[in-house]
Length: 246
Ligand SMILES: Nc1ncnc2c1ncn2[C@@H]1O[C@H](COP(=O)(O)OP(=O)(O)O)[C@@H](O)[C@H]1O
Ligand SMILES: [Mg+2]
Image (tube, rainbow, N blue to C red; front, side, top):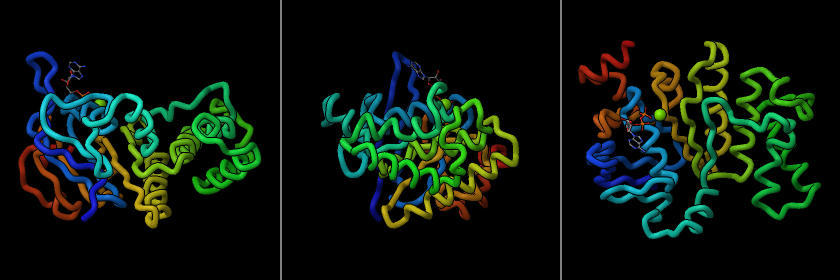
């Protein structure tokens, strides 16, 4: 099995506060893995470690086979191009159109020519199921679901190896939630040949179980359970049952 992320005996302490403890997880490439946990479990802290924004107090983290602790700041910044991120509120630039939002990383990080950027953006607009009419609209003129699509197109622009979804459906209505989940699944399927790895951080159990290949449960900074989704659903660990039945 080829792994996108390998965490081995990771500890993170802030002063006397141990936030990650003996955390072990290997996340396979080309699949969808969800990390579940109550608020305060350490999900965002783990995400920051995966991105190399925080480094562990002890233990090892490899991303795409590379040990992050061996990289300096410049190498880390370069390395982050392997990641796409989609946040809870899509985090679009309010004063930029759909086109400009999606073109932004291409202008910033590539040497593509104007017409190449245009082709690429149009391809992305199509891939995430946006209508061509939304190209010149501002985020404020789009629905919540459409904004997520723009955010996803922007996250995919640099053809990342790993896409991180932080609470992608929190605060959305059921219909938009379903749409965003379908979008995550479609994006994963469409990029299977490129082995795109999708990692979802969420406390929305029902929404994510349907689309995930693997599920991990993080409790107080430790991976309590980590299984293929079918196995995870049947666990009789009381903490997880409580979480699943919420
Ligand atoms: N920079 C920090 N300094 C001290 N404590 C922190 C810091 N970042 C996070 N924590 C603590 O780590 C714990 C986990 O936080 P977090 O990773 O944000 O949890 P989650 O995303 O699962 O809600 C919380 O108790 C939080 O207060
Ligand atoms: Mg968090």
